[in-house]
Every structure is written in structure tokens, then in C-alpha cells.
Image 1 (cartoon, rainbow, N blue to C red):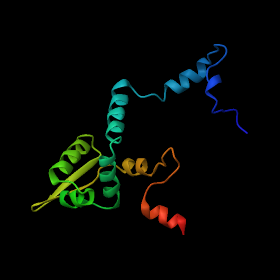
Image 2 (cartoon, rainbow, N blue to C red):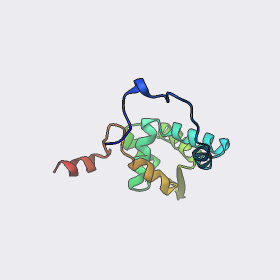
Image 3 (cartoon, one colour):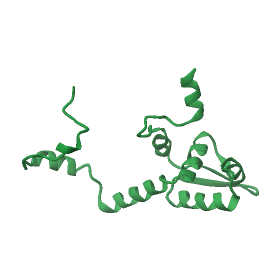
Image 4 (tube, rainbow, N blue to C red):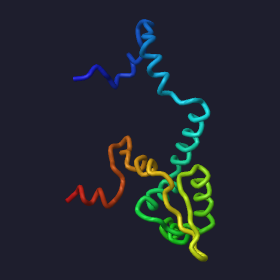
Length: 134
């Protein structure tokens, strides 16, 4: 059994006793404000279901705007707008091949973020869920 509780009634210390060494060690792991803002902006982008669907699709393979529009049942211009936001945050990258523009995930860390289970405890993809049910 651990000493942690879900009871919010006693979620504050009853006395103030600061462990300065722990605070200093923890402070070393907190990035500068500018980097925190960049991270917060990226997480805001990940808070949109459409952008998450795009990222999940791109985690499987690179896709063109037309492919993504079909997948999302959306217009190419709406998908392109979402991709511009993701590209500005360096979450996706693109390459041109003739008249086609293909998108892919830009950083391996994006794949890791997409695999993090939700708070509800589900892993996400239909394929994974079906495999688990068998």
C-alpha cells in the first residue's frame, strides 16, 4: 500500500516544513520560462481532436493533404490549415514530389506522446483495441 490518497479533503500539508535540498534538485529539472511556454503551446495544439487525428494518421505513414482530407472527411483547405499550425510547432514536416505535398511526423517524440494512454486508461487505436479483445 502506498501513502498517496485520492481523498482531496486532506490534500494540503498540516504544517509548513520545506526540504531545501529537494526543492533545489527539483528546480534543476524545471526548464526556463521560454521553453515552458513553447511546451505549453505544443500541448495546446495537441488538445484539438482533429489535429490529434492527423498526427495519429501520420504516425502510420506519410500522407498527402488529399489523403488526410479524405480520412478526416474534411476539405483540403481545412486540413491544410491544421497542418500549417502543426508545422509551425515543428510537429510535422512536408516534402514536395512534383505537384504533391506529403506530410510526416517531424520528431520521434511525437510518436511517444501519441502512445501515452489516456486518463481513462485506453490505449487508443482501433487496431490495438481489436487485438486486445481477441
